[in-house]
Image 1 (tube, chains in turn yellow, orange):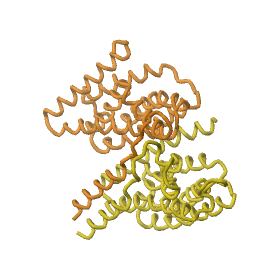
Image 2: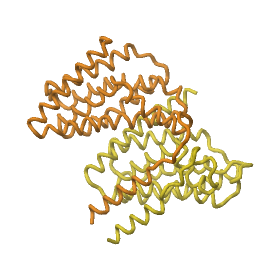
Image 3: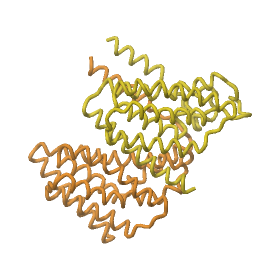
Image 4: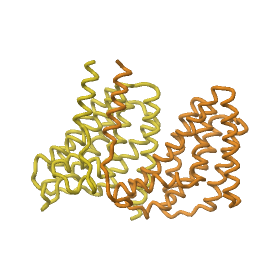
Length: 197
Length: 196
């Protein structure tokens, strides 16, 4: 009963934003734009989902090692980005990381906390740098927007990992491996396109 | 408790996955995803072959039932990368049609080769399918969304084939699945001769 209330509460808290005639970012409050930023930039989403699949399959110890690294590096990236530091080739870095994480998930690699932490750091710092409000934008210097982006960038993978680890049944693990394969495929193709361009 | 939590999570997933309504289509992230998602589904040769992969995996049983859907997207990506990079692959459409014929026949004849043989066969055909998708990727409104869309659609077609293939647990189901394989092989023949 307590778990059901927790899940329902979580569902209510994470209900998506209201429908609009245009994409969700355009025309909505900048806070919500910051909240949804990591989910609406395709390269960010790909990296987040791939990392989640890998960490969920790797188990609790690896996830508990990598998640704080992710949270910290996203924060560092946002702060540095808001001070003018620019990520070098963020799309290529994120797609490469997504590819590696997807491959790791598809292969169901044994738990490697150090590697997981490194991948989390790369994803985190890149998403943070790439998500920092641009100079001259309405969100420039807005701490609440950066906090919202930071929250989504680590809370979504944390939730996905927790679900995988909590319900660690065979079919959940297989589904994560298949999803990892999908993400590897998508990341590889777009990476080749990005490099070609 | 586990079942109710699971149902709750399913409901939550349904809520959380609800996309915002959009008055337009074909543009931006959503448009790219839609285009990519529809690409394998609107190509009957793709549909036939993808369903056949799922059917054959279910027919072969564990571990093929999940290994083939893991192998296929990964190898398809290689073909896709070749298509994106402009590396030519001869007779792509013939290869796609042939995949429907061969995989359909494997199911129809209840072929149960060693897993590595099935994997290699599926991987070879995955290259052709990937190349076909990859050549259209540079034109997509949003390449990442497009790639996610067609990879997910491919996976869902596999799932559909697996779902149908699970009928093999019953004797009449075996006949139905093998008949399905035969139909897929015939469809492949139609594609390759231009009849379909």
